[in-house]
Image: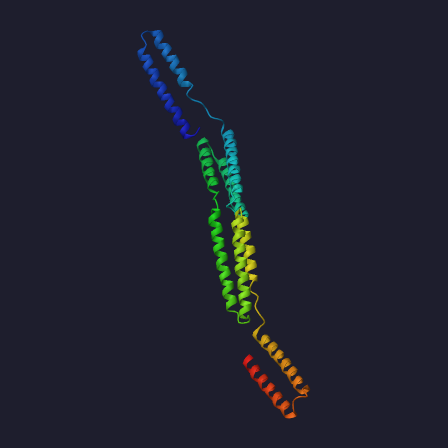
Length: 268
């Protein structure tokens, strides 16, 4: 028996003893005295109610712990505020604590030790279930993270000197469009896993919206090549123009070459 069970039975013995003494005192003859004695003895003897054997108590308490562990696991699995990884982590801890509690019960030498091992194990197992962040808070946190990520990408776009202003504006519009869609996807998510999946997918999309332009050196060379081609086209047109004198052709061609050199310099 546990200490509480022993105390309860002993208190009952003492109460029945007091009652029996009172009845003996109230008896008026020998027969009544003996009858009060015999009744009191029978009652007191019945106050000792042995519990199950230690082995049976261990079996019962281990089953109780197993049932408790399963109830906690069911709560964890049903909690939509927990991600799959977090659920697996908590369930793993429940199973670990159940094994430890079973071992402690097996090592217990008496009912009191069995009861204490059970209660300690139950308390640990119950504490293994830690609900996740409420869905609204989780969504707001991930939307805030996405907003910060979008701003980081926009800053990178604005700082990218390989992009023209039009290209920058186009990329920034795409970032803002993807951010709006991402926030909607997060709002529509029903579980912690779905919220995180919406965040991760959207972050990847927003990060990809920054597409650096042509490196400055390559851009310069390409535009200088385009200007050279344009200048040659104009020179060919001048040479082919029968309305111009040779001197006028030379003057115009010289101006083309001067302008080409000037704008090459400006591009550089």
